[in-house]
Image (tube, rainbow, N blue to C red; front, side, top):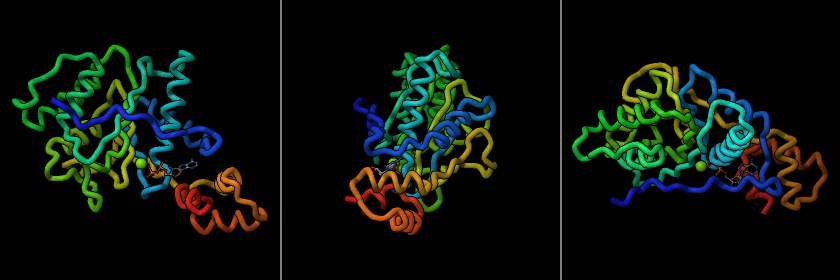
Length: 236
Ligand SMILES: Nc1ncnc2c1ncn2[C@@H]1O[C@H](COP(=O)(O)OP(=O)(O)O)[C@@H](O)[C@H]1O
Ligand SMILES: [Mg+2]
């Protein structure tokens, strides 16, 4: 069965165009490695830089792993959630990557699929970071609840919010993802992605070839609150 969950590539992070946001990257990585956190959702408006920040975390986590540092010993997994992904696609793809036997997903109710996914990520010999980019495609953008035609997604969010997990999950999502129950963020925590700081914003404009007095560049960055994509568009 063809699955809709793509093994995508992280977006570009080359320093000729992308600000490295090192303190943020280290902060997100440090949170992800805490024992009392299973998952982080990078949230924020479109173009804020969520996917790019996730890509920077991806490379940082891989550098740590290759230097035998940190808790992750298996390769970071980057998955791009497109508009038609279902929980069954996620379960199938992740079981495959983790080398676990496939389940007869058609026979499992969504709640059991959600538990199967959680258990697969929690029972690994080699913990890894799993990044699900564009997770908002599974959600209602107004409420953050799973779309009605994506059964089990809310239950999976409940599961990752309620207990520790051997693997860690990094989501990017416009809205804050909501499970089916009104529990406070516990093992699933939100990290709101804000704009670039003034120095980064000015550097972005200069690297795109904008030549103007620093005072004017500063005003430009302030006016769009450091919004990464807005600055990129302005400079082009
Ligand atoms: N750290 C960054 N440095 C420079 N440009 C960035 C950075 N983050 C994002 N951008 C620009 O903004 C665009 C949108 O970023 P993206 O990460 O896709 O946003 P989101 O996932 O929040 O919608 C990128 O294609 C890039 O041009
Ligand atoms: Mg994105």
